[in-house]
Image (cartoon, rainbow, N blue to C red; front, top):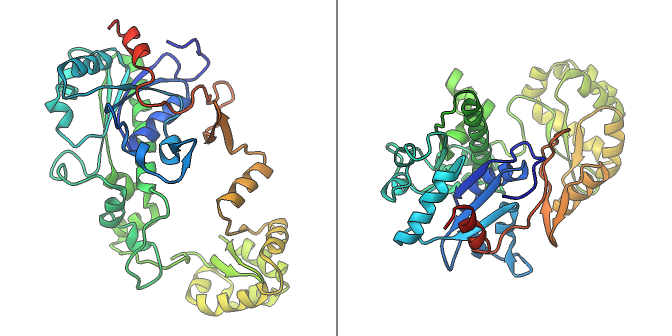
Length: 379
């Protein structure tokens, strides 16, 4: 094992049988916190995302590079008895196993939870599926499908439109976060009892949880939310407005912030207007109020308003592209990017005072750690 021992999860070995996004994102988070992650890949091809380009950086797909740092790669043919035996040896040695094959696949290979439990009673076994291991086991677990059938597209996009996907594979990312959290909870239980357990997360369940207020509107009140574009169903003003040169977002979440907005816009009469005195009134009179605000915002640029409104205590910001977003994070001292062995990476967002995330290894090339893995397994 590596000499690195400062991470919160150092000393843990993770057998990563996942690919694409949700599973690799979860295991990268564990790796950033110090776990030793061994990524098991198909010989000759590897993780599907190795071929998901352009864009490329140094001949490698940036999609793959996004979620696979701090890992080691071993190429194993799980259809070959020798490859399968090595995989079983890795699982028997591991503290955590993460997989996102179709339900039943790992069982057929002899790598399922029930088969491995006698070999490794302390193993935390995390399965990531699209729609669970029951009636939904046969459904393909793709983020776009989950966004569609899980309701996210129905509340995204313009009113009356066909539904719009989020600009990133958000369901995969949220599911990866849930998987990592479930693994940590199971490890805490193992610390107390010595017993491993199975952790199961699905794209659909994770999405329904992540829909928060929209999902609650349905679960608690039977209300089916609809797409409202950039508007908020319950708060006004909380949407996109037009400054002199480009759009700006304003999120005045309470009456005090609304009054501060009106003062900064030199329109104090709006705050005194009985129609706009409360949030409920502003929601009811949304179209009238938005027209008034857009007229006032046309006097200055988005960046000018960003400075003035922020100083006045009004939450706001221009709509940046990613270059602008990284530039802002840098100006704020958030250190959003790191370089690992010559590969640019997005920094881990978790900040820990005593055991911070580390960047020890670039994303691995396919099978580059075969010898290292076989050595620790005595093979």
